Length: 60
Image (cartoon, rainbow, N blue to C red; front, side):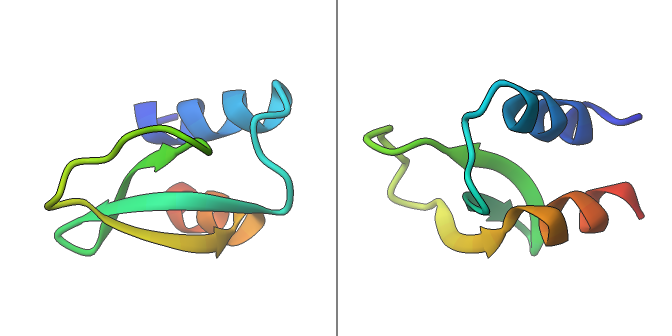
């Protein structure tokens, strides 16, 4: 299991996410997530995505 997948699964287990998650992508790949109220860098690209789809993408 890669570190990014572990972080998303941990967040899901701890209730940090509902059905969607704010995802940060770098070079088109999922890099991290952003919680409500969390600051992001000006160069970060953030999108709202379905949590299960994100986990599937990371798993493959």
